[in-house]
Length: 257
Ligand SMILES: Cc1ncc(C[n+]2csc(CCOP(=O)(O)OP(=O)(O)O)c2C)c(N)n1
Ligand SMILES: O=c1ccn([C@@H]2O[C@H](COP(=O)(O)O)[C@@H](O)[C@H]2O)c(=O)[nH]1
Image: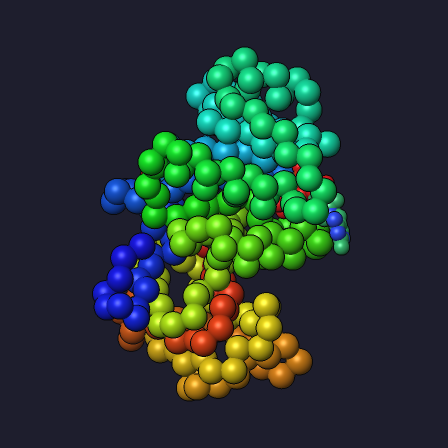
């Protein structure tokens, strides 16, 4: 993340999926949903400097990489361990993964894993541009909502943007202020959306979209911006100004190298 001026945050949300990685560094968190080897391969081998897996994510990682699991050993495995198979946990432990039990039942395994990832980065002085969690959509609706809630919780844990990702979609939380998004890595799908999931966003202004907003309110039950798309004349640049945190989401097209 960099800033073009004190008030504009500049981000390339899908820089981490570019097979020609241009120096982007991420911390990766694998969640308990089926994993795409294409997505994992780009993130794991080209961008991830810290790799974490939470609970049943170990089964998903093992399944996705079963032809060559020894090349996919995470740095950190966390969770309350009601989903990870003991064989898979033992496999990664034997190969050197740090395994930490997080039994607290007031936060999800994802939130607790994120806390530990942030802690490890601070302890080891690891700098990353993004924290990317894969397997964040699909599966249980309560878990999808909890994953989005983790984005809100993350605001008090780290200033590093936290991205939810799968093979089809990505989402992250825009902070109050103005954000300049680069959406021309080649990995973006056609659709995008601005979803005021955490509460009404009374003042939203955008550029670079087909359906722009001009100091308008986004509110469930009234207006939310879904099935939006990019203005092709905007050179892959989108700006969003909001006074309140606002969920940005867009399609993903995995590029194979
Ligand atoms: C008000 C309230 N509702 C629900 C819960 C229950 N709860 C919230 S987070 C959490 C842990 C979830 O763990 P995770 O491994 O992420 O999900 P699981 O697959 O076990 O459902 C639990 C049990 C709670 N503590 N408080
Ligand atoms: O349907 C689902 C199930 C899980 N997740 C995410 O994975 C972690 C770990 O899940 P466990 O069930 O504890 O193995 C969970 O905290 C969620 O973030 C999901 O997104 N959808």
